[in-house]
Length: 89
Image 1: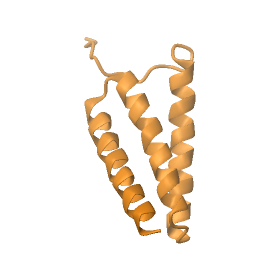
Image 2 (image 1 turned 90 degrees about the vertical axis):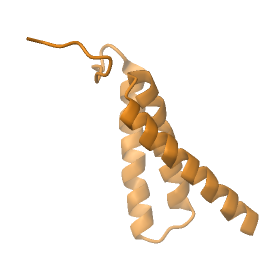
Image 3 (image 1 turned 45 degrees about the vertical axis):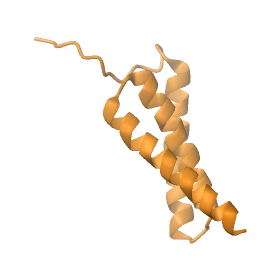
């Protein structure tokens, strides 16, 4: 028995833009992790923000509440980090 849910991962053929944003955001987050381990502040923060913002958009399109919460909080944290960074310079 197959159950329909509101949350699903669409195929590339059905939602091509979402598919590209998902993968681009994932690659950006990996680059952000590399930047973090190499102490490339604040570039790591900018990359993390871009990756999480992309994933936030994807999670909204997918209607995936858990991903929306995680990425919305992450985006808010990075905005706070930008304010602190630019206020201090």
